[in-house]
Length: 454
Image 1: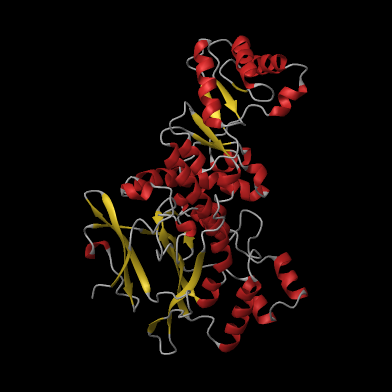
Image 2 (image 1 turned 90 degrees about the vertical axis):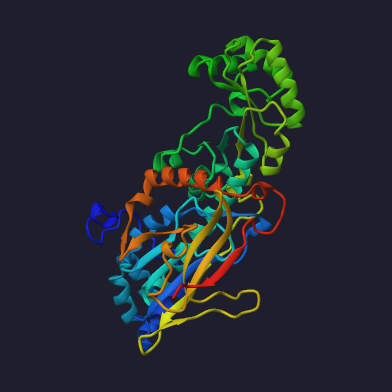
């Protein structure tokens, strides 16, 4: 069953996403309808020229959100009225937009997949008018979500087997916070504090109490006792509102040695964590877990690797991409039909912004299960694109996401998120050990272009 079949032919399920679009997408369509090129078959490609922050790999995230946004990419009465009243496009273009439904094909990397410079993350095939209009929505979703996933993957690597929770909603716009929680979960985080992310995407949620809870009560002991009575002894108590040593003592006295956990949100975390662990053990609470928060990023997490920490909570750094808030992806026309109906590869030649023309097939070469390169077969034409048969020692990277306007529902919703998370965990195992370092470096895999097999 397709998304469209599930909702009825051509019907959107949510608010229109059509005006989440740059104006020049519509003015190009307006001109193309006038000069007759609007229906010209084209191939657009979404890719990154480089990895932001000199990181060693990227993580594709946002694909499922894009498919749902595409479902709702409809120009209804309100959208058309706005365009007409503000003179954005002509009456001819308004008529075109009124009936707009993407009927082309989108192939791309699965969500959770790794990418490198030049990877054809999305390939959008359709007429110029129906494909160019998707540029802004595709880039806004994938640039944001992939930036979050890039940071989250690095934090996940630094954390090792210790669980990570995303708790950055108060450091992002309200809808961006939900998207960030989703991307972080795909890239290795285990839970989120955001309830909407839990409801919409099926992500486990977590959270107990803030410092305000302790400050509300006349004493720290009263606050702890009330929390334990409400949530049970397995709850996590926040012990640094006042004096940490006193907080630990009070927590164990109230909850007993079966206390589930304590959270530390301030101080020199390696030193404090060691002292808290020693104090808990002396008091007999040897099974009580220590969670640390307090402005963590991948480097702070790595610095805590030798400390007696059981879990991490990360906020600002993960929802802002830890210094790289966008993935820097672009959306470019790479092939089109000419006036005679033949296919032509096209590319920008601008300084530092050049692109590679042609339709592409992408593969990851492997030796003994370890990735060695990103292999991209480039075709000047349309029918000669490489298949897995031409590259038996490599893993094909592209799947069909939308087939003649019909989105594959397997990549959407909570099930799509769970699938993307599992896929990311699998493909990260293919990386060479050098790819796991946090220092700035060249990409872990070279991008190798070859001519498509003839």
